[in-house]
Length: 152
Image (cartoon, rainbow, N blue to C red; front, top):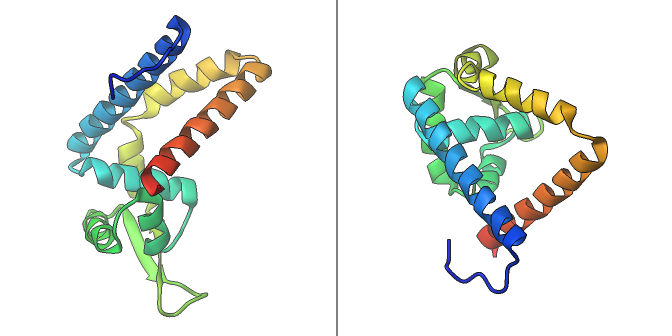
């Protein structure tokens, strides 16, 4: 969010502005949903990441979220009390646990995203495959830049 922009063309500046608007909108929308279901916004993102990763260890979740293992433990305690996740013994390592989303409870959260997801799916269904490939490449690179900024 720096004012240092170098020599951006108007189109490049527009791309950056739209990314910033998208990012802010997503954060605010997720915060609104979290408040509606009585969760912390980070808890909602933890559930999102768990869906992306699948069942995983708390350590892998901490790494994916950029949080300490202690912070993840506190968050998982909240999510387990609220019924959104289950912690189970790891059959591959008796010293660790696996975390999985409780699908039935998660449905109560998903209903708040349903309309946006429907509209988004309809939009990308109309996009030519070549354009989708460009978008995917762009987003992969943007995500890599973000990860690099976080992990150094």
